[in-house]
Length: 268
Image (cartoon, one colour):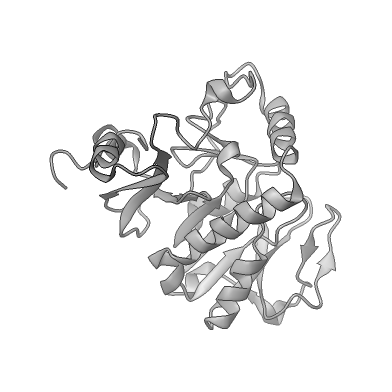
């Protein structure tokens, strides 16, 4: 890695002279002991303002530790609901394209993904792409009274059952249960109410992904809209687990491990 790996967005603005989205990229190594390759990719806009809202722009939303996760969840749900159905669809299609373009997704033989529910980032297009590419798609089923999920291979959206949370799950068929370790290049698509630029997420409070992610042997990808991205989620605990990649409508960003963050700087 060179002494100055960051390609400045300001420098790219001067070079291009065009208005519109500007991408930057840097090469990085592995993250959190999991395989990563390629580059950090993100976008900002000429003229100074980032396409990703800053914390100060988020309508006075407090991010300090006293706020509490419960209040933060309510706030981010409200932010998410402010988008119209049409806006969400357009954003989610862009996120799906960006995820599909990742080399980790292209190389994956197993895709461990949530099935989107309500106003979550839609995963159906990515699931369909995975099936068409011959990948094994695995959906989670919550183990009652635990923080664990079991994963089952599915080949269509037919035959799913409604859980007590209202989410569609695969039936409890032992012959279809699979574990991530059986795949050479698994990826996980991870939901959240918010993500930060270090890969940490604000979930729904069940702790299922905080249990799942530390043991996942592949690459984890957080799917989030830019209006739900913050610089740093200050309300964390020891069980919170970050993802390897955060995918937005503007692009995707590989998350560096702590020792590399000082070198790589922030996203720009």
